[in-house]
Length: 357
Ligand SMILES: NC(=O)c1ccc[n+]([C@@H]2O[C@H](COP(=O)([O-])OP(=O)(O)OC[C@H]3O[C@@H](n4cnc5c(N)ncnc54)[C@H](O)[C@@H]3O)[C@@H](O)[C@H]2O)c1
Image 1 (tube, rainbow, N blue to C red):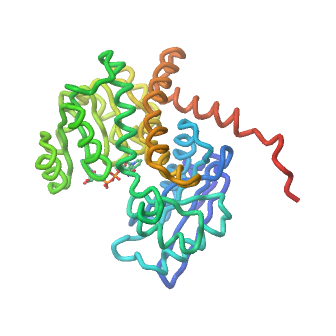
Image 2: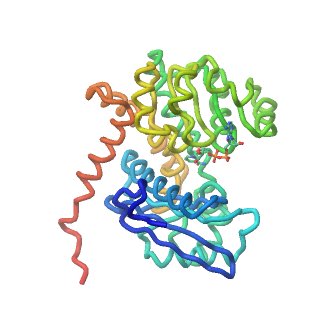
């Protein structure tokens, strides 16, 4: 397996591997950039088919975290961890504490939190070995599950898109199709019904669909039909890569605003969407609510402070759409440019930092 030859290796600063055979821990941490501050990104615990697949994922996700933090105006860099294996079989106190020691060995260059396959309770165990673990339960003074915060940020991004689509940031009557009503999708559907939007959901897990239909009174369609549902906005809240050359021609929406990371299979899909007249709100801009929420733990978490900054995603999204229009580029290109400009402008600031000897 090679790191530097991977197509996902984008000048990452540091990629480190660790194992603890006694607990079955096999893990990779990728630090893409610390230009703006310590790298922060969750730990994904997943039964990857191979080490190559895990490496590709951690490289891709950590680069995405750099963009997300920079575009959100945070003083944080991008990093991510993956643990290879089935979380339902492997999780143990020893595994988490070994992982915590590994995170600690990086001296704060990488800060971890929960992600797919990990929970706030897991982070409590990691924290016994390192101060560089956040997203611990609210009862412990942490910021808790980031999903409702992510959903809140999606609503903010959606308001900016609604203002573009129909000249009104009010969501009443907006027709929104949600793919995946898990932790984020369900909270988002709830906020939408409270705002009197019209919601259609689909999930491959029947129990998840039934819960949304029963508790929120939303409509549902089979998962294979959700992309082509006639709607104002499609919200991918399941897995990435769903927007691609095959699916774009069948989309029934006028815009896309969703939480899934890496929604576009390739950069070219942003151009395809623009050609199809579909407004795309870049995923790493509108799904930053969870990251913003957890970043507030670094300075002492208050919900009011975090939520205020998360609501700023509305303005950030509107700005990206403005830049895209003014510069004649796709919103995805505009968002990458905005993030990169911040890294270039502030990332080089070291004038008065004391020299380390
Ligand atoms: N949790 C967060 O705070 C957060 C933050 C940023 C980004 N994200 C991203 O948002 C997405 C959702 O995260 P989550 O925490 O809600 O995960 P989750 O696992 O709780 O929910 C995902 C849901 O999607 C469903 N699903 C999977 N494939 C599907 C398909 N093909 N069609 C329809 N439904 C499908 C699953 O059954 C599940 O109910 C992920 O891509 C995640 O990386 C999450």
